[in-house]
Image (cartoon, rainbow, N blue to C red; front, top):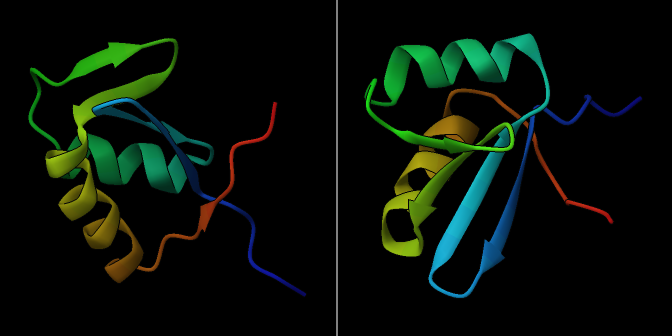
Amino acid sequence: MSKPVDFTVTATGSLAMIRPRTPAAMRWIEDNVEAGAYWWKGCIVAELRMAGPIVEAMVAAGLQEGEEHG
């Protein structure tokens, strides 16, 4: 049985939107992403160059990345 998806990432142009899908992902963001981060429609919005290290750190912490659909 596969682990549930904790977060998804959508890249659009020069921005990425990281959407927490589980309480564990939300806690990780609260603990590790600066309080002034820009949120839009339930996602953290970051430049691609900044999103990569965030995603890598989330995966290294054991969170499962998934694909955004529709």
